[in-house]
Image (cartoon, rainbow, N blue to C red; front, top):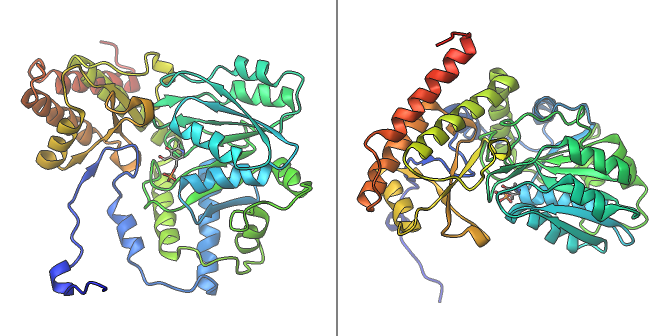
Length: 408
Ligand SMILES: Cc1ncc(COP(=O)(O)O)c(C=O)c1O
């Protein structure tokens, strides 16, 4: 029998006010909450069509592209992976997917659901894949796509785009780049770097709610889609028909999440007001301060080479004898701060601290380091008093003097 519960017992929704220093979702600016709460209109309302125009203009600005096919998919970031591979791959095609973590592995898994042949080129978690290995793997073969994650969120690794573009050119392949964890936080120029298919997620450095996946497709990739011999295996993610709605005609395809589009529009206005170069620099400087603090506390990072560190996600090795969950639970219960644990082979080995979008702020870095010191001390790990905050303050002071050209 269906259980009936009095709504008074369930109570009005009243979530805790967390500081989400996770690898996504990130905390949101109050302006984005206000946009979410504005009145709903129909998805074919003439006013909403203007709102869609704004959304696409802002998306193109953030991706730095003039691609016609640019829109937010009604899906989380995984939907962006799915759309990228199912539109580009069919029977007879070959794909090379660079795997250095859980999310790039997901791209390989989703590609394996198509009829194409998929080759994985791997690197250990904590390092980027070597483009030279992709060149070797593709030699003498006809490759349709080369795919990788610019930001691998499971390990906090950044991969440079240029060497992969070069190899993809040699192989005659389209370049597919996952920027779920990097868009609006890490330099990216879709047109200049000639990325053919680029997708992201709204809940990370854009700091909008989860549930949408912005995607942009180059004219060359669009042509490859047109030249397919078979139908795209997914109706929902067939970008040609989805673009009937996001293109000039604005024809019904499916009912999009109107309120999420409002929120995304406002979050992107905030990104563009700040300016991309300033935003990239903010993420860089805050991560440097976080890292200075973490290392001063005697903790180690998973990603050893500074150039390989993704500014939005810092992977911290959990010291021996310290319980992963106890630390994370104490941070949550005592300080209302959420960080994440490791995924897959890195489970219980690392903490992942996210400084994404709205959360990449100096006060949050300093608060987190102080909270972590208290928590580690309570859990029996000896930390030199105030070392984390002190080192972060030094890092900020150094960054500021560098910026104004003061010699010390
Ligand atoms: C790099 C990367 N790709 C894809 C995804 C999948 O996104 P979602 O969880 O929104 O489906 C994530 C999620 O964390 C991610 O970090």
